Length: 484
Image (cartoon, rainbow, N blue to C red; front, side, top):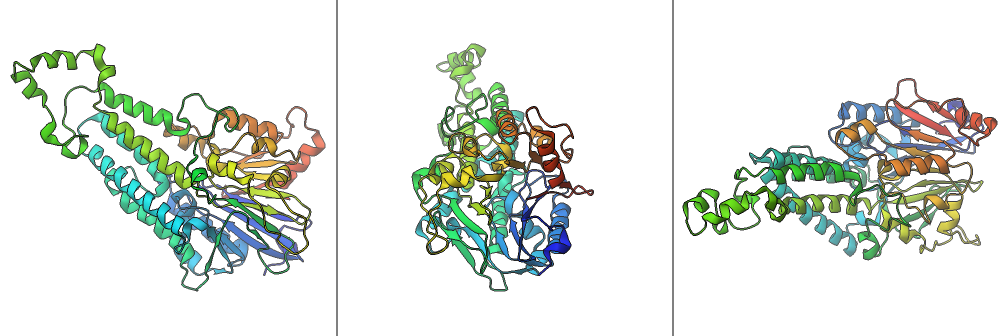
């Protein structure tokens, strides 16, 4: 095991390395204990369709291998989304050859858990429904309908699906295969299925403790995806938040096109035998009056031609959110009490459930630890779901992180997100993150560099200088380090 003095950790308790994959999570945590390094990898993924995704993942995997001496003390795969697990498949040769002592995943991956089996079955049914809708949209001659299909397929990119809608099911299987690369290793390393309330010492005689906050076991909490604007969210305008602009624009384009172009038998909400074609209406004197009414622009608001498209869009969003809510949420407590919070992409239902979690003592005779206490002592927060509005709770969430030393990190590529009309990071949340962390915001965007030498208003220069000295930006642009 590498010597902690020899690899840049001298005098520091830990190093957090955020790999700059854009819209994709990959964090390497290195802890110094008794002059030895202990390495924890949390996820390795990138959004499908990101530029040079394959080469980036291979390069990151090689960097992890080099930094760890080809040995991970703990590997964590938080949930089955491509932007969190793609690297385990794309760089399988690197990870397969790596010595990995322990593997942690959420209880939702447990093949013997009835609730987990039910969740996976439900997800499969939803994927099949979305697949059928996207296949119909991909065959359409309607520009607006195809645009809607591409917008929905972009959302499905978190499952590894490309914009070619007809292959979304095949690509979702790749995401499952990537997770299986973690849970079914050939070296026989068996995964631990983590449940809320677990308090773990990750390796023998460690001073580090890890508390499992989510995903919740309660079905109602798992299905709670949106929350209340006043107490739960740093709300954007508009009801749908993250993907609203893209989907609304595409659906509106489909609604505006009234040229009567057929979208294929499978694209209609009713059986084709129940449909009236425009040519039939025009040729039948008893129905001809409908022609003028239907094509009257003043009646557009009454048309339901594309309502079923809206349903497939909603289904895609719900599926994405529901999978996010199965994220494994971990709080790492250092020996001095400081906490590092990694919620993956947990959404509001999961955040709410944390407050009712009761931890089993990590060791006999220890004082009880509460989730509120962990939040109050959080000094590093990995921002959920690339800074989207519904993955960071307001009350009993970010507002409860009261330690003045708080640093936040956002794995995001704002330019890529904006190109898809996604609001990542959400502006109201980004503003509040900067306020709560006193300007100490780290980002994965390629254009992001070390914060300016001038501190934000109200932050003492000495305090700001200490923060800047603890941040190291890789000259090659591959990662950002933060030293604690």
